[in-house]
Structure formats: structure tokens, C-alpha cells
Image 1 (tube, rainbow, N blue to C red):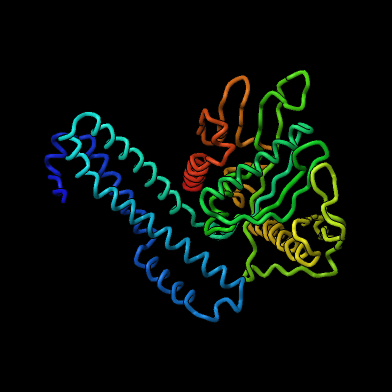
Image 2: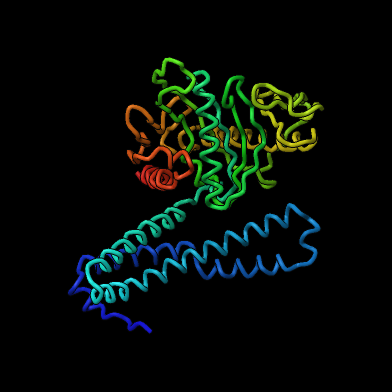
Length: 379
């Protein structure tokens, strides 16, 4: 059994390490306070009691909400407890490293730096305190300028966000995918189902720019493409977004896949047009017309909620919470040629591994973006 190290000895041998660990302890203590660990445990007990009810699955939608909330609450508590355990073990780790030599000290340093990153990531979660931040997210991606390259770029972005969600164990439900004729997509709408998905992904809203050698240009020329990302909170019954049926035109048509091919022999796809506002939404990924209509109505409600929030606050920048990232403003640049770099134009955060980013490794961008937004709200 390891002996607890003497803090005085640690200070004498590693003064910088000791100061760093003290700073990490302060940050983690703040995180624990904001998350209210005891309340989190109480919430888990309550959800476990609900999950054990044999009648729970009589209402499948409610049952899925309960089990999802329980899973994420348990994961959050486990994550905080593991961070506290790792931090408590650091002094012992350095004591043992001193006995084992320089390589062991380097390993201890690496663990400390990784611990700092993990605590910082957890700290970001405490910054999501907006009215809708804790909700699921509805993500809409549309190709912009750039022709077939832009359509391909929009599909790459869709994959990036879905891969990010998969890596975190978040559920994804695709409502609509409108394929372009040659390659890629014109647009796509999907939901990311996880607590705080909206608060987390809302920082991604804006125009994303790709620079690369076009795979669709037989002369191998460099192409700049644009795609637009919109993130909305999923509407709940408490939002009171009432839609008059007389205000909605419903059109049905056959679902189509890549290249315009029909993927269904019935008119199951649904297009809803909200006549007073001109908002149009489509859904074609479900097999039945009724399911597609329900999903399309959810998207329409989310868009109307967004419109309502704009009117209430009378300022789009305040609503979007990203310092003014509008559809026309570039918020991130992805360069694949002549060099490799992804850079957020608001936060200046950048990495030199676009392949990893496009495979869903975007946590660094999200975390720096949330911190940047938080600073803007405090100014």
C-alpha cells in the first residue's frame, strides 16, 4: 500500500508542481460546487427509482428520457469522482517517480498535464447556464458557395458532427438529408440527443470554410467552399409553440437518395411550409408519412421558437450567444492545401491535424469557443 506523500517534501522537490496541483484543486473544487455533487447523487437516486418502476415502459418516450438522463447523470458523477481521485493520487505519483528516475517523473508530468486538460473540459460544462443549454440540439447544415465541392463539404461537416456525437456516446436522429446531384448534400437536419447538447454545440453556429485541391476538378485546382451550420434547441411542451394547422401547407413526395434516385415507392417524404413566416422544413428519413410529418413538425417548432426568441430579445447576437456569428460570417477555416490547419477565426484556437478534426475531434474548438463566449457575456 502506498504511503501518502509529505506535501512539504513535494514543495521542496517540485515547487512548480505543487503550485500547479493547488491550482487544479481550486478549479476542481469550484466544478464540484457548481455541479452540486450531493444534489447530483440525489437526482441519480430519484432516476434509479423511476427506472426500476415496472410500468415505466408503458410510455416509451418517457422511459427513454429517464434512462438517458440516468445514464448521463451517472457518467457525470463518475467523471468528477475520477478526476478527484486522480488529483488526490498525484502527490503519491510524484513521490514514487522520484524513486524511479527521470522517465517516471516525465510520466507523472504527462499525467498531470492530461489531468489539467480533463479538469478544464469539465469546467467548461459549468459555463452552460443558458435557458435552453441543457436541451438536445437540432443541427441543420446547408451547402453554400462552391458548387459540388460545397455539397461535398456539407456532407463532410455532417459526418464530423455525427462522429463527435458517437465518440461521446450521444444519440443521433437524422430527420432529413437532401442529396446533391453529383456528390454530397444540399442540406441535412439531425438531432443530437444528450443533456446540454444545445449549449455545447451552439458555439458551432456559423459559416465553415474549406480550402483544398478539388477532387472534382480534373485540372487539380484549389477550391474554396462554404457550408452553413445552424444549431437550435429542441422544443419541449413547456415552450408553448402553438401552430395553427391552417397556417401550414403540407406537401408529400417520394424520398430521394444520392444522385436523385428514389428510395421509396410511396409518397412518404413531407414538406411543411409555415405560411405566415415562409419557413420551410422537410423530413424524409422515416419510412412512414406520419412519422416524417411528426419529425418535420418538431423542426418547424424549433425554428419558430428561435424566431420567437429573436423577437423577445430584439437582438440576434444576444440570442445566438456567439458574439455575432451570422450566416454570412466565417467562424472557422479548414485548410487542407497548401498546408494543413484548422483555425477558429473568433478564438484563434487552431490545430494542424484536419483529418482528426473532420473525424469528430472538435472538443478543443468547442471548449475554447464556450470560454470565449463566456468572456464576451461578462464584458
